Length: 287
Image 1 (cartoon, rainbow, N blue to C red):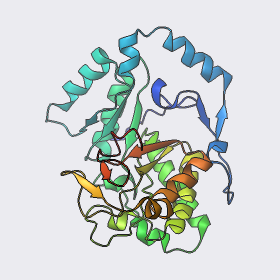
Image 2: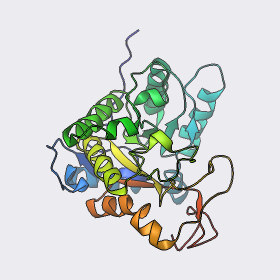
Image 3: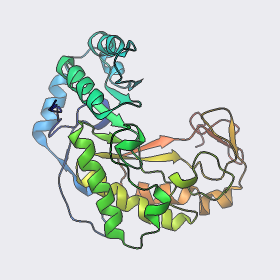
Image 4: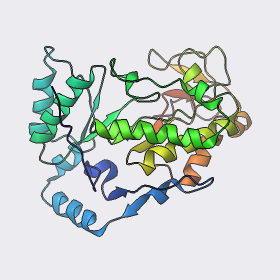
């Protein structure tokens, strides 16, 4: 069966996440601004303003929520998604594991019922195969970084964006810009572009440029760095006990470069940087 994916064009769906951005194609430039790929569009702004005026405070807050959902049939998720979209007016969805066909059907279904178009996100660090078992997989980030050609890093992002847009996805929770400076790290490892902070920044920014030039928002993660830890923050409290000086020269550097270039979004790390705060970065005001 051929499924036509709903594609969100011109305005990138959710009001709270990326309203008013129209992505246009561009050629890779060594130190181009990531925001250069986002063009201001007056018609888009007017549309967003007009829709915002129809939403009460509760609905505007709901636009900030992007729950993790499943596209697999027979597990009760379709009913839950329908309720969240129709009754709660959530702003987006992040699909967990599934298949291309199941996610296509789910995306078509929920977009058809949403009063405000939904922002659809994916964890596609090495392509859709990270979540969709029948999709084409790219090599892990460490292998990509070993290619000494920045044009290919950019094209990797561009092709990933093409496949995401074909699935109706506007946000990629990638690239990982953590510096893999601790070999005992159980969760970053080959997801990182390497152990050298400057190289990580170069590759990640080229990949992000490829994504954003082709209509998908890049998300740098995990701020301010998940590389120099021994634990998995998905499972419990994780600590980075590095000095501030080490953090500045390593973990923070790729993020600083991304901020200078105008990255579209950032995901925080649930890691405690004890030289700065005992609270995890997600909750620490200092960070």
